[in-house]
Image (cartoon, rainbow, N blue to C red; front, side, top):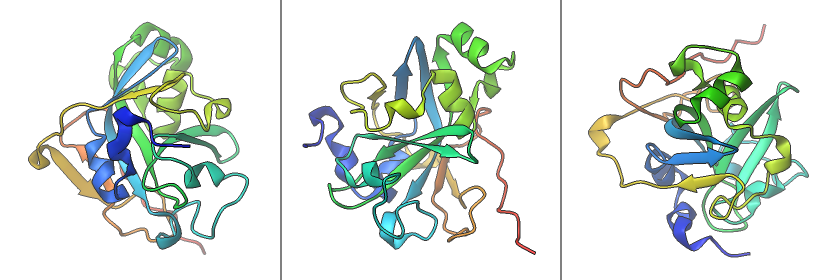
Length: 196
């Protein structure tokens, strides 16, 4: 399988691709979200990654071509979505943490049962719920759909903030979360709960 031509830059290093996704739009089922927060995961080089110990039935999509959607279930109930990056055969992905609904807010409100615009796609599970993304869409090509990723011109680095990833026990201090500075849709930072 080859990289989708219009998403070819996703084949780069995950730490370069992740901030490049900020400002991009994700479209599905009548809703469009502008991405405002993402997290990078570097596969076998990253204890925080699902693919740290190699491929499993759950993670095999992460080893596929860049520009593929990796969807998984968090806490057994919340769907979260990632963009697969890097060369095929390696596992890296960018978790889509938050965004601003820019089209289809009425549909997003029905799916989310909230009236606050900033909260419609705030947090990875809420983003998927607003867009109507389920596990069945895992493995989709983000260039051809049904979930479509559209990149925009790169944003200047002074508009982007970085910090530790949210809720991780493996490599929690790596500053691999990227967000648009001052955006109200960015989720709150929460460190992982310490084990007793």
